[in-house]
Length: 389
Ligand SMILES: C[S@@+](CC[C@H](N)C(=O)[O-])C[C@H]1O[C@@H](n2cnc3c(N)ncnc32)[C@H](O)[C@@H]1O
Image 1 (cartoon, rainbow, N blue to C red):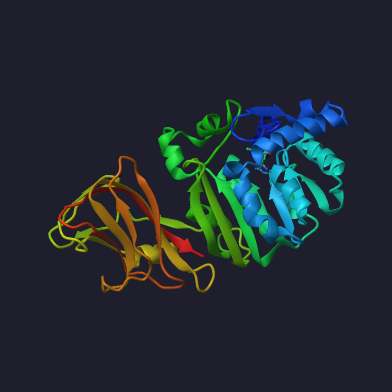
Image 2: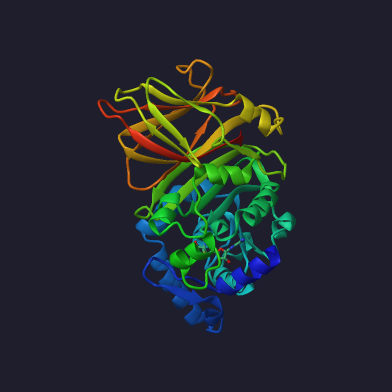
């Protein structure tokens, strides 16, 4: 199944974003047929469009000194705009790609620029190719718009192999498509969403937020260095420091909370419908409105795969009016065991994850009103408990 998918992908990614946001896409095979001078002239034109500050210039500036003298492996290097820039500033760079022509093209440009000494290449022939990665251990993994083009399970297999070659304390940096972009473009199946983001023949594009990237690395422990959207809301940027590498290929199990009893608090109105909780909060700021006990769901999750893991609840919530806070707490509602997330009313669904600090065990999931004088109205469409590293 993954071989079939990757061969479809390989057929698509012979054609790559040609720099900037205005030059469209180009086939690497067409460029390879050019003589050296024409190839370099073409590549330089694309690169100039790509490295303007608003597109890649800002991150070339941000990471140039960080990567000098370091070893970085790039997943899906395309036309090599990033790796070649960092090579020129002193990094040791491993380019990897599904498509051999893409790598051959990058190799020709790298050699023409006299940067070959610190460059190496890996052809991604299948989902386990990164197991055989050479040249490590690496200081960073760089995946700019690549891993989200494979179904989560394939990307996870590649991720777990890549982690084996990363130093503890190394960085994991990705450019993603945010959940909000996916919603805006019609919440399409991932097999269709890619057509919107990268053209007709794109077999897959999947949204990611910070917690979904971390879940792909689970159960390795990370510290978040950067997490924001850029490019007018079209891209997400996630930069993690991988503090502790915990090899374990099992996915984190999850337990849906939707069937569990929820309690209305402070005369909130709460309706449990199939697949949905509808809540109207009391119209006072900070008043609790709803509690879901977690004891049985935690039992259902089973034993911790590793000591010291925390818990997370992933939720989809429509906030129709007002503003609500969602948080994990112990038996005493005022004793939060993680950070509260505050969600304002908006036309589209919020996707949010609330977490415990480190290894705390939560007793309940709480929702409360977080706006003065408005009885906030919400629909909770899904809530699932899992372990978090
Ligand atoms: C949208 S292009 C981005 C290229 C380059 N990173 C850039 O920023 O211009 C996607 C790249 O990811 C590669 N790719 C797609 N799926 C991949 C996968 N599952 N594993 C490794 N590379 C993949 C493609 O071959 C292609 O080079």
